Length: 351
Ligand SMILES: NC(=O)c1ccc[n+]([C@@H]2O[C@H](COP(=O)([O-])OP(=O)(O)OC[C@H]3O[C@@H](n4cnc5c(N)ncnc54)[C@H](O)[C@@H]3O)[C@@H](O)[C@H]2O)c1
Image 1 (spheres, rainbow, N blue to C red):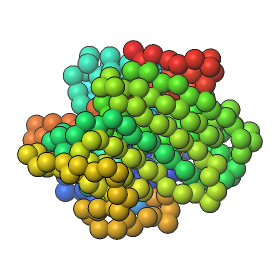
Image 2: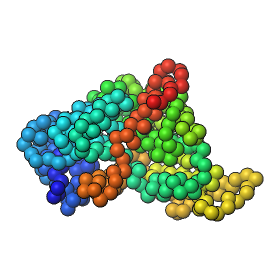
Image 3: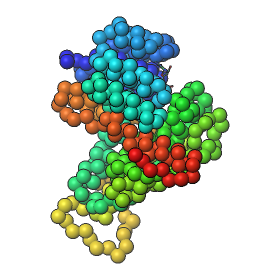
Image 4: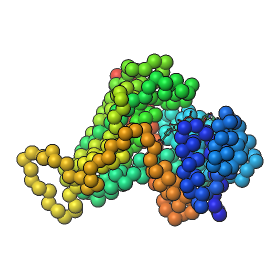
């Protein structure tokens, strides 16, 4: 393949961000089509970024030579659009979460296996240097036995956010609230750090917003196959909006990532003895300097570009794909399991 030809479906908030990333990577890919059911949105993106506007993916596929389809529509439409693209033999990039349920994610996995093409799900925070350093330390045993973790998203979304699109805050198209839409990134990092989740118990409530079906606060606990235990706390009701935070603790070290930055990091390299401490010190040992907390917790980082670069390298066989559908499926299983638990009042075993 020479330079792969991309089609973007969904020219909304995140679609525009993908457009910018594609412009930045114009030596590695070409944007040939943008499809949005609101044609003006597609047109304004092609005016800015290139390619031709279409009202839907079907028309774009019929008119253009396309190698890769990028799906940036509301979550509950990811499946049908990705499956149409895979049916036409295309590679696919899907915004997070892959779909609203595990069963719908499995339908995309089945279509991908039939097509034999590549599919990545955007999970850009896996590409943050803070995440890479933490996961590398865990893999090298430098945090020792990882026994617990906390995924906390303490954000604020005003009523105007939920009112800004018919699909927001609905089960059918958003798939959930604070834990699914905002929290999936941090849940994904918890899973990356602690391994395979096997059971979840949760409570959820809609406590600070109106006219939404889904939760704006969820808390829960997760048990992992390794025996490690995790805590979930996701809210869009924490005014004025604080941070997304991951804590990971082991018997040779701990890491805290706050708003994508390493706020605390302590590891013990292989071969080095752990200092015997009667009680731990609370003094932070930071490998990356002080955390620079973002004033805008929802701010998108350059990490999308890093994930695009990994996808482009995987297309040419130069690197393995770092985030696939199976990766994202685990987070969707934890989140939908948490919802089932909150509904039934019982712990849910994850298949
Ligand atoms: N990775 C991240 O940090 C991040 C951030 C924001 C949103 N997202 C994800 O991106 C997705 C979209 O979110 P958004 O905030 O951009 O939503 P949005 O409502 O701003 O944009 C969605 C766009 O899709 C279009 N659309 C709807 N149905 C379509 C169809 N069948 N064909 C073509 N276009 C269609 C809409 O007209 C709209 O322009 C969601 O899955 C969301 O979870 C990810």
